[in-house]
Length: 381
Image (cartoon, rainbow, N blue to C red; front, side):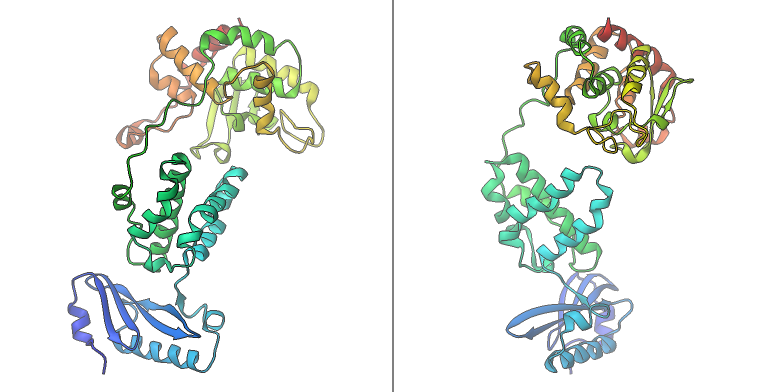
């Protein structure tokens, strides 16, 4: 006989692990909510196998499922392979991380981010957490994994922390562990990181007219793309991926589809006369095999993100391409009377206040048209 009873299980209220003996364990999250696992030793290794949720598996059935699983293991059956669809096998952290990466990478637009996501975990998390079952990883182990780089590589450490949390939260959602990642307690066990100094280096808006004159001194796809970035206060990726079918010359609008926007929402950009002039000059580089406005050396592929940065470096500047968005925002704040929310809409920034976001139904397009025209007049003279 086991240690648990059907009535006892029904009356349990305190979250925790309750053993029935012979490796059968009930992991209770709340009254009536939990899952069964069976712990089995095979070939000198301990494995935890999920049997199913408490709501679908009463005590008697859980015992029977545990007995059947132990019998298969004793007979030499490779349960991991043969019972994968029938038993919930709790993965190690490294296996779980690879599954999370595989499931989510298609949603990440940036290929560089796809590679970096798993690479940082392989480098900084796998050495200490990789072989641990996701069900066994608690705050101290996470803290120990982060500690060596927490002060020496603070930005990387923050990313690793977030990615460890994503893996463990996924494991919780899949039923592999009882709780989400204990990331708040992890922070309390680590020293305070020095405050991040500054932002992406941005060209002061006062310098832009002279730079823009220099930029227009020669014609190339890269230079035209950088003009378009500046005139529309756009992200580099939005411009480099721009296609002719997104442009409405009659209405003077550029509609960036949701899948190419950081926030996942389509964004309409009013085109100034200077921006339309860029498009007119870009037609000379149009290829019959591609709809890209600013094609790379291979016309079927857009420009590299380094192409635009190289133009700045060739001029001897240490600014970033993304920084031109800050130049625009500073110009709006210091030299115009346009409301901040109109400038934020031009930058396609997400509204952080959830209440405000729920009630705002406008993208300020009509107000953005004169603002972008004034910006273009300032930049292009």
